[in-house]
Image 1 (spheres, one colour):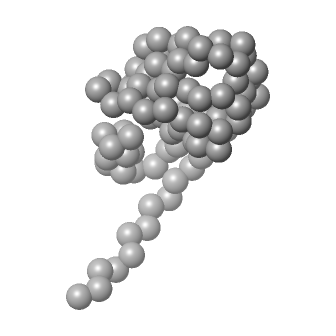
Image 2 (cartoon, rainbow, N blue to C red):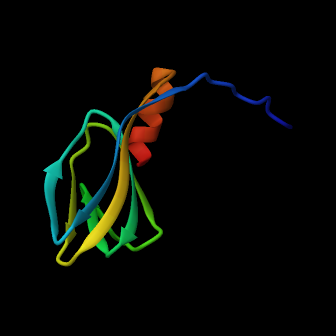
Amino acid sequence: SILPPVTHEIRAEVRRTETARYSRLDIRDDRHPFWIVSEVVEGRVAVSCGEWSDVASPGDAMVLAPGIPFSERNDGPGLHRWGLFSLTGPDDLFAGLSAIV
C-alpha cells in the first residue's frame, strides 16, 4: 500500500556564513549550538565526530549537528565556505536527524 505523505513545517535561519582561508587547520572537540554546513573548496580535511571519521576533499560538504563535538585537521593550506544554521520544527524530527548525522 502507498503511505500518505508526511508534512512538517520547518523554519531555517542563517546565523552566520564565512569563507575561511587557512595555512593549517587544527580544530579539536569543537561544538556549536547550530547546524554547520561546510564546503571544502581547497585542501583535504580529516574530520571526526565521536567514533566516526572521514576525509573531505574539494567539492565535498560536511554537515554537523548542533551540540555534538567534532574535530577537523589539515596539515596544509585550504579554503572552506561554511555557515551556521538554526532549524526549528517538530522536536521528534530533529532528534532523529541528530542521531544519524
